[in-house]
Image (cartoon, rainbow, N blue to C red; front, side, top):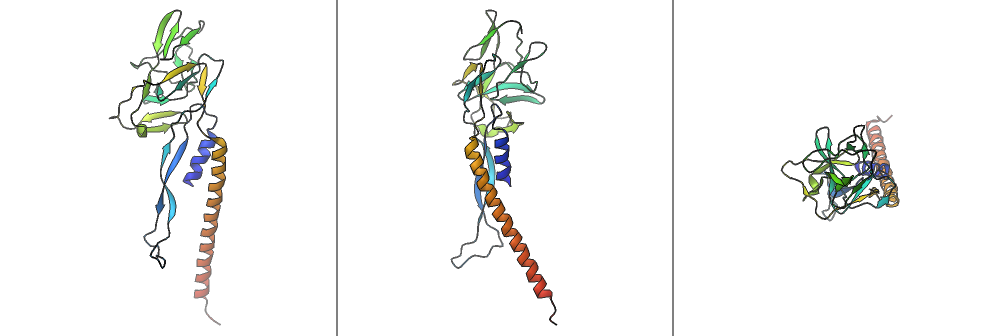
Length: 231
């Protein structure tokens, strides 16, 4: 069921910009009450030990929107969420009514110092590969693009945001990352492969359901037969 939930969520977000695929680590479960066979081996079943996020880069797609920005290489855009800093690869940005650069959810895009970026909606602007935003011949703000030495501290919040779960791990400025204006990073979900895997897991799930149903029926029949008083 856990695997089905992961696969279904991945497929549901296959078209979500900047979405990162969830995968699972498997281990073997053996019941303490399982009886060993003649060779001394007990029956085992696979179980999802924990899930992990695949941070590999998705394909960059060209758009005609100068507010769209994509990252090549490792790293994340920093935005200010309701409870602090959030990190995302989804660079589908917008301008608020006051000209502040925000995400589609209304979170302000951050500068390295934690400030916001304000643009003149009536004038064109350019974004350099290092994240500097220039308008009317002057720099109006620098995108805060950070990386984590250990991405296991990142937990998903929503479909395209991550939060740092360990305050002791401080993000660093990304050094091997370039910003591409008028491009967007697609989800890294491999839709055909995920669909095939989903079908396989569903068949295993149905097989296990049938086995459980047969076991229950056999137990019920055994109880009925034992409890029956001979005439």
